[in-house]
Structures are given as C-alpha cells and as structure tokens.
Length: 253
Image (cartoon, rainbow, N blue to C red; front, side, top):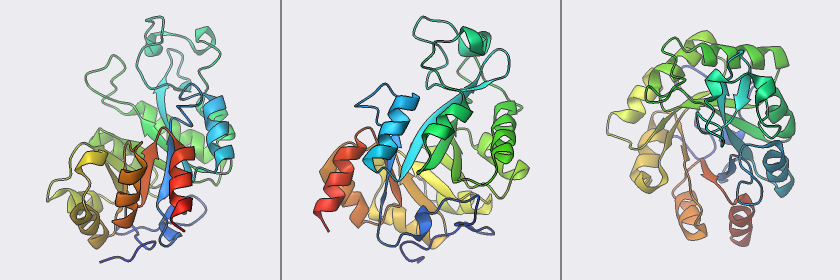
C-alpha cells in the first residue's frame, strides 16, 4: 500500500510546479473549501474564495462553464438565478458576482485549486468535443506554474484533459467506487478519484492508495465524519464549512 502522503499517479508525479502538493503532507487530510467558504459567503464568488484562503483552507473547489462568447466563467448551475442559460449569455451581460476563471484563481492565491469542469449530457451546455476543457488548460498554461487539479463527472472529459496536458493532475468525480474503479482510474493516468462522501470506507481508501491514486471526497460537513475519514487516510475532503473542519482537525493535534 502507498503510504500516507506519498500517493502518486501511475506513470506520473505530483508536487512539481504544476502539481498539487497535498500528496506530500504526511498524515494530513486536506480541507477543500467547496465553492469557497460557501456557508459564510455566496458560493463560487471571489468573496467566498478569498474567505476560504483567509480561514486556512488547503484547497478550494470551483466549477467552470463557458459563456456564449467563449469566456470561462465560474458557476455551478447551467442557468443563472434569473433563468438565463449561461452558454447562451454573453459574459458582459452576466451578474457582477459571477467571476471569470482568471478572477477566481487570483482570489484563491495561497491554496491549491480543484477546477471542476461541468459537462453533463443532461445540461444545455453539454459539449462532446470538450472545448471547455481545452480552454481551461490553455488558460492554465498561459498563467504559468500553479497548483491545479482538474476534475469532472464525465470520465471522457477527464481523459481529454490528460491527453492535452498530461502534466496537469486530473481526477474523476463519481458517486460510487466499484472494485474496478481504482485500477481503471490509474490505468488512464489520472491522479485521483473523487467519490461521494457516504461511499468512502477504509477499504476504498486502501484500494485507491494501493494503485497510487489519491482520494478526495465530497461533500462532508459533519466534523465527526470528517475525522473518521481522516483517520482512514482520505487525502482531502470538500466541505461547505472549512472553518469548522479546520478547527476539528486542530483539536486532534
């Protein structure tokens, strides 16, 4: 089994300039602020991201989509609060609180960033060619060195990211971890699997670490469960309350 703090993807590596450093903090489960500090500020806004960093979150998770004019923006749902579809709306016509990817990454300075690429076939902005993924990678390349982890529920999108930029860590979001999942994720060259928190067990963590992939769960807001999963060796957990989870971890030291 890969030891805590040393898991690396098969055929790849973590911890270089463009990787995430969380795999090297032995014995520490990363607190990943889900859409920023989203219980204290509106999620997926620069205010929430800056607050998460100020609170001490190790990582920040955010969601990206494309506007009608091709701008990569940060928003969870495919529609705005007023019902307008994001992919059919120009960036300059969006509410001021919807940041671009660049603005969001600037506000996350000091933490590593999990960029979830939204690309569901059940949503109006579905893109089977994964142009959004390519745009995100182009933006990261233009920014230069940083700590990014790209993820998506659509495995083909994660694969596309890895093909285009194999040096950038990638992860598959999933609601379950079947027996074959860890090996398949490793075979495809990805860094991590991101399972739904209720399905994570010590066995799931062990099977993933055995093949050299990390485990980051979503979304855990209960301190007792967070500590249970940390004891099982989970590498990171998304949470809406990073301040609460950081305090829970600190109390165990």
